[in-house]
Length: 383
Image (cartoon, rainbow, N blue to C red; front, side, top):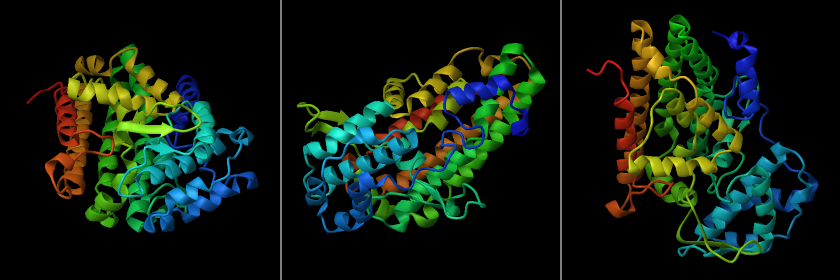
């Protein structure tokens, strides 16, 4: 089932929600690698960030930034690049010294506020910036594979940090294949077309397995201690008591950090496969994570949650029922793998159990266990 099989209705739904038929939630065109000359101070600083992080000089450098006019950014790809840079500057500023900063300077916050408002996203480092819009192809002919990707921005500049982001980009690229098929599955469910539904589900199941294979590459080149010590702190967001954005507002803002739960890909699979997360320990956090997604991607998930249920339609036929359960099993395996890897990166590195929280600020072990159980509960042929 190739891209030529996507009918006009499905293609138009994808376009409307900024979902590329081949790349999924990754941008259809490679991310912008450099802004116009007017934004040279930002471009110079992003190159210097790893050295400034290591010498604990980030705050001095960000304080010295001139205030640039973000209104001069006209195209969405430019806004995404600017959002990535300013998100990195903000997080590096807050977390670069032993005591977090409780405020960010107005010369950073005012243009950042303008950009965030136009993108309809919060002013914080999030999956959309640090993963979806933070890569370049080393060889354009080789495509979106982990070994052929390089991050455009990072905090510490280590190969481990680049690998951490690029494995995540590769998972997004791999899972992209499922998105048109989820729409085909919804359409087949509405028409009670068992063969089409089975075909779509079989490819989705295989795609989820391929995503797990990508995820299993994480530990090849991202060391556990480097992640815990050098990467994780900069992705933790602003917990209580929050951070004041000077020049934008007087009250401290509290935001979650970048988290895999902000990936629209896993949320889209849950939505289409009718895997609700209703436990208080999962639903509140997952709903909160949606506001960190690009808004059209969030609406795509809502679209998949509406209409005919793939699970109900699959239950009516033996072949589609079996294909549905293989998708559920693949999702459970993905979540088990994710949980096991996260344990090695966080729990086994944390000095105390109180400090073993995910970058989104959650008690991630309990959260991942619950989401996995909520997934396995959706099997039709419960053993």
